[in-house]
Length: 125
Image (cartoon, rainbow, N blue to C red; front, top):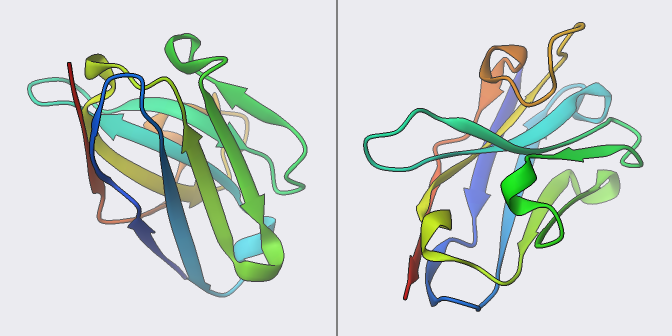
């Protein structure tokens, strides 16, 4: 069982930056793939970025490539999402997730078993 808690959300103007954190507790955290997802009002939840257990391989959705960076510190049981050059369309509730995709696409919601409660990110123009 893994418990996930996000932090770091807030309000920022377009072009600004935020860093989200996801602290994990429980067993076997280090063996799981981890990901960031987001859900804007009236839209489905979408995968933003994912990172392999090693912390070396990463994947991003096209809309955030070059602006967002996912990382993890296994010693601190924490995953991060550095978000730069934020746009109003990045406004959403951001969730972290952990699991073993088992062959599913790494940015697919169904690939992850454990979820945090979400943190709001609001970007104003």
